[in-house]
Amino acid sequence: MSLLGIDVGTTGCKAVAFNVEGRILASAYREYPLLSPQPGWMELDAHQVTEAIKAVIREAAGATRSDPIRALSVSSQGEAAVPLSQDGEILYNTPISFDTRTTEIAEWWGTQLSPEEIFGITGMPLHPMHTISKMMWLREHESDVFKRVWKFLCYEEYVFYLLGVPPITDYSLAARRMAFDVREKRWSQRMLEIAGVDDQLFPDVAPSGTAVGTVSDHAAAEFGLPKGVAAVTGGHDQLCNALGSGVIEKGMAAYGVGTVECITPTFERCPGDIKGMLRNNFTCYPHVVPGLQVTLAFNFTGGCLLRWYRDTFGEMERQEAGRRGVDPYEIIVSDLPEMPARVMALPHFTMTGTPHFDTHAKGVLMGLTLETTKADIVKAILEGVTFEMKLNVELLEQAGILIRSMRITGGGAKSKTWVQLKADIMGKPIASLHVSEGTSAGAAILAGLGIGAFDSVEEAVAQWVKVKEVFEPDPKKHAPYEERFEIYKKIYPAVKGINHLL
Image (cartoon, rainbow, N blue to C red; front, top):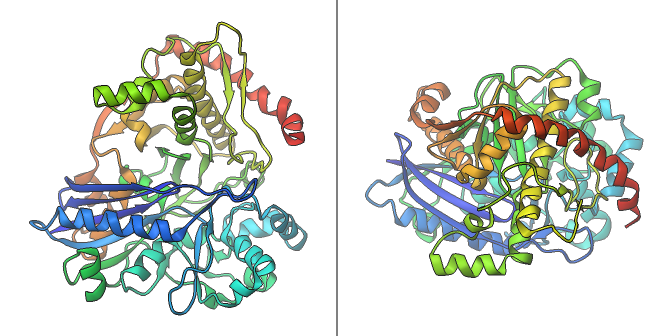
């Protein structure tokens, strides 16, 4: 038998089939565009996402007929929700995490409850990204659409719906809505009453790794799946990535390098420094692993910044990659300066993530001269994205969440150049894994747990997660990066006001 992990991300979705020993049998990926109909708006057309979901499942299922899929689970981006009518019509596009249209609603929340109260109930800092505010925005600005909504489904439970399974979500993804009581593990009546939102608009909730139904025969035929495939609750993508990276004990952190850069430390209970957590907009909510909690340190401008460079300035590299039959990024990151770049980048090309949560931030390239080369700019982009994450790690440790080691996954994990640079800047060892797609692996492990393929999380991780290489920081490079980091920390406060004027 095989297990299918489906990962529905911000700019693309992937389906990866594994055998029970953790070996990849098939993998399929499709991209979809981010839409920006107005400045600050960032959304997905759920019709396009639906077609991508169908395509990757069909492709993965078609390649595993000799080892048929027995169970599947879903890893999902947080916050973005599909408004569905009772008869299954997609009623509106889905604003994603870094859409800024709900900024005023988030400010309104601050007049109703203190940040401490919101955090105490939901484990979330107050921010425009959360699903409850997106729902309120739709009610206020598209009331006719809102009246027709049967359910707002994030992409985990939306995939279940497409497969003919009851649309049930897990604790971790439920928490991303800022409407879930993380202590009681149920929808918060207080948050919903303040918002004026009926809990019937939300799906039911179950722990990650819970079998919630069987793919319908009709959906199995449509998606190319065998009959009788079990559907198992998954989780928020960063937490599935942590599980798939073997981050199941305190002191460890997953480092996801994708469209968004995210570090996910794991611990047993929320640190006592609640003010420090809130000041830096860190969360505290359930892991997909029972009995553990997580927080997130992230920046919305991650790998998408290198993609921006590729699409805007990298035509020559793309052509060369086509001639050589290699990935354009392989050429873009080759021949970079050995030591820190002469240029510095502030990677705020979208709204920021932690610690600032600045919806009006802008990116900066600083230190440009007539001698600046394309390689300088690429190196500055890679360094700037990592400096932003180093800032988050520093603040996490000040709040009492210590990180002794990291495990890196995602597209960026495939570049030894990039991983070594991150280790040099962080001053911490970073391990790459034999399976770099930890998010899909985490979802597949949950699928296996749901049907009893593993006796425990620990057994599954020991069997599936193998360290490929450990990148130790180079002291000769770490020292100058420490000096550059002190400069980096001064850039955002210096340009914040100017960027807000822009």
